[in-house]
Length: 233
Image (cartoon, rainbow, N blue to C red):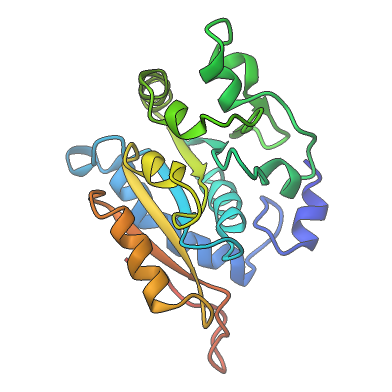
């Protein structure tokens, strides 16, 4: 990854300093990490965190990548960033990487292992699982037993691993709610002054069975004298 380019784009990077975006995601990640690693208070599969939105263009991929980068700065934690927006994958594009086999390829082949498609990066604590090839049966694949087995493997193989999934928008595909139902934590990105209250309510209805849902109010204009907005749960 070209970390200098990502820094110029305003993304969180290890050497980017104390920018307002970096501070935002320090606030955002803290309750998520408590839920994932809170000892007796940790929630089941709390280390599986899906980032979604009601509609396209609200900044979910931006938030997923920044959240992954920020958590990767923690001591004694590794991060796996999964592009689960299998119809319109964009994580690799944002990071300036070429398309590679990934999630869909594992679910479609019993010969591929997770280790075969995980991409190591020049951030030692961050790895990436691309979306892989598109498939018209993506919803069924994400709801399959093979996916459940894969998620259990991802969640349990490494005790120090946090997994961030960049999901499709909830109101555009059925894959999003299927994926969210299998996660320990859901983060829904809401675009400030653009996404309607109706869209937010309908998106939340899609994931009403999920116990741990958090909202990020994205693209806000800071108050005079304020550097960033906080995190809403």
